[in-house]
Image (cartoon, rainbow, N blue to C red):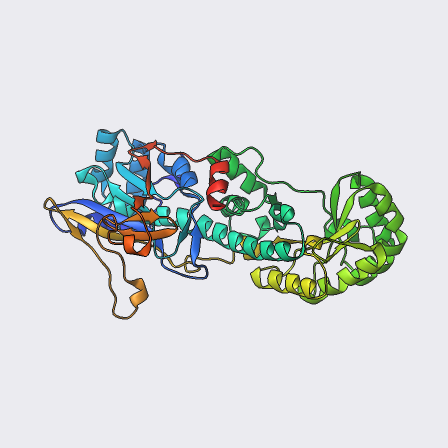
Length: 465
């Protein structure tokens, strides 16, 4: 195994010394993960299975221990060599912990337990919190991306319900984020998280994560599309020839192609080149041409373009009374976020245009402009077994009540649409119309074994419930 993937080194420096910090007689540590609030009131759980498969199913080796000892001791930390050697000798290198979690794709209100972890061997009580860095990161990032993507899906769905055809929803938000993230792994995890909600993506890494860790076939789709280099390489005087080449190469009956058209003057391109010079060729091809503006104020540019295209290509009026362009569509891929999407669709509706006329490409704002505080994710110890007795462990800072943690061996309970995080099954809810609560968390990992596995289809189905 590469040293960069060693679970022993996949932690914060200070965690290495924590085996010496618990009270004498400690044999068990129980921790949970939750979103404490944030931008959205619900989260879409995703990514834990990918982490387990990548990092927890292979045993640690003697070489892993030796290298970690060398690095961490020189780094200034008291390495727990005896503890890791015990795991290797007693457990054949598999981590003696159990992880329980809500189903992947589950939509859960914030301030609720999403996953728990505890050691299964009393000698390894220190392991629970040692894994916090890797485990929390594995959950918060893809979950936050999936949550944001689902929220935007709701916005687009609202406008399609009012003005267009809801059947096109899955291809209305396209992932343009591969180049805008900090790493290949982020592109894969974030890209797969987006595909939980949509089926349009240019982030191939997302397809691979969905395939490798969730057994997906092809989870997302794309179309031939021009970029500025392939247009401007023809020269400004030959702009129409660059567009004509795109039509000749990719415009076939039933096909869809996207052509960035703002290299010079996007309004001239729409009105005079696409709307006059190439109009007959586009219409005769039987393809759908998607024109992409990529600069300027998204709301104003899209509003002006759709009026131009309506004049040039004509439109029909759907059964909801909104105009739908003939032959052409728009995709806005610059400056796209939840606010601009809502504003563009709101303006379209106000001027009688259906949301069917436009799709969106979202890059850094989808996969990169999120952090752990977007949904205030945290992993906290809530119970410890000391001298044979489980005791409550709780953080309650006077300076920030929002960081008060849960106490006890908390889990997640559900009755109907109501979720409750508590140690024991909630009682006394019958007067509010609720029946018995059932536990939501399922055991997904124990002592080196993936106990529960979800397919990508199951993840998508859970997210759509």
